[in-house]
Image (tube, rainbow, N blue to C red; front, side, top):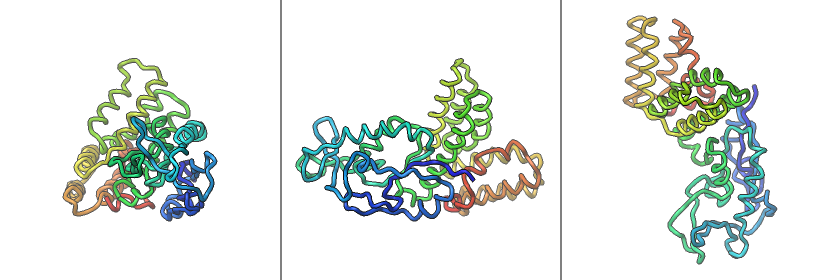
Length: 315
């Protein structure tokens, strides 16, 4: 099985690159996700020549700007070096499908990184780390998540869904750009998008019809941005139930009355929080094998990530 290439903060791999000479090894990343992900470890602070151990850095508000400076010597400013390092790494990251970062880092934290006044007092605000902020600015479509947030079942499932969807898009659309490939991709992903945002589902459908006559490259670029922006939104029980009922509509002609009622009952149990999403999805997959429906069987919604990860057992 070909693993999906994703970048990761080097300290999460157990590498001793942190300011204190330690690491923040993630067992979930190392021993679970590693079966499917091919990690590209990066430490931007080491990348710009800082040693380990080293004096710590933090974010400081200086007028209109947020700068990255050494905690005990604000004259040592590495803001520009971190941004330059990010831009230089972008070509190497061209083919990754996700990025897992360490939280609270002034270089790698995705969000909620504390900002301080010049006198060392908290400024009462937070932002992203300077290095990863530049990566996200240049690659807004790229799935990025903090390792700590992967402990939340919904955030974990959302991130991994995005990684697998983006890998699929890069492999089957961007690798050999063609309108027919985009149409095939959208046909498989329409219900997954619907689960995340019904308005985006309609908008992406209009985009694929290309009534504005966009060039193939422009069409694919706009679809890529819209798709990943949509999948970043957290799907909820109401939107999932809506999709499940849409799928039922395609199956009802081939289902027996008892099978149809059983599926309705399980969907309602899910909607009310009595069972998790895996229950109705498993039943639908069972009925597809039993009665057949090629269109529904092709839907990425029913199999967006490896079942071995058990992600839908908890949402």
